Amino acid sequence: MRFGLFGTGPWAHQAHAPALAAHDDVEFVGVWGRNAEKAGALAEEFGAKPYAEVDALIADVDAIAVALPPGVQAEIALKAARAGKHLLLDKPVAFTAAAADEIVAAAAEQDVASVVFFTRRFMPQIQEFVDRARATGGWLEARIDHLGSIFQPGNPFGESAWRKESGGLWDVGPHAVALVLPVLGPVSEVTALSGARDMTHILMRHTGGAISTMTLSVDAPAKLEREVAALYGESGVADVPPVPWLPVEAFGRAIDALIGAANGGPASALDVRFGAEVVKILAAAAESVSDGRTVKLAEQ
Image 1: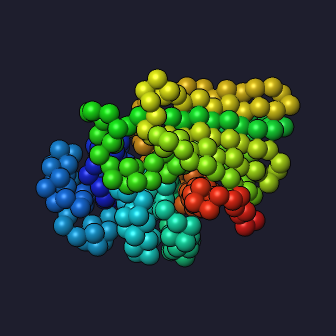
Image 2: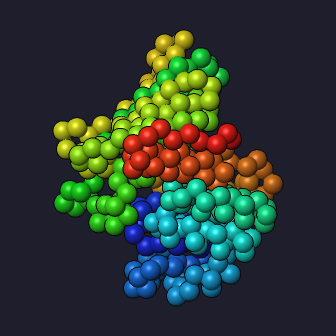
């Protein structure tokens, strides 16, 4: 499958480009970036061609991979879907439910495959945990703490303008939601509060009756950094297992899932429909923070 990569930042360097270049079933065609010099350097490093125009790269490939801010990604993904290109997108798919729904509709209309890269969901240990938890059932609640500190010297993600503006809700929040959603089911209500140091607290009611709580930050004090998650229910407590940080390996599995779906296999459970559902929940949390009220979601 011929791939074009959109984006030249740290995530493109750490995950997308090396995984595309190493994959046996990928022809890494080209790179487009908002900075032409960076696009040229990344393309040269991985044996691809730099492109100056978005439309030109879309035209030359079968699928796109995106490592760009959500607002920029949404515009390019919509163009690519309407052109009949398969989509390997980063999380979150977009910043608004309307933008995410447009991509879903275009992908369905053009019958293109899609995968959203929720990094750890592509690690076998996490997928096995999700499968076991769904089979067990009887869960009453989930608790997730995802607190990091990216604004430290030497952390490349701290220079990201969209992360500075949108914080942990939109950066690490998608990972948290993507973990509980397939186990506890759709969300009907969201309440959220935001405090100092980007500390965002989310309370979600799932349609099956379970409640999940999340504490998120990308600007936490170093001594408070943690990533822990657990389910609680009739069978006791199930701790989400820690997994090694292997983004290239995870992205390789995301590529596998996209190629499989494009070749007539089953659609990925982490496709743009799922990605849009995550966006709707995060947008509801942002609305709750802003308005100080519980936000009800439309029935799925």
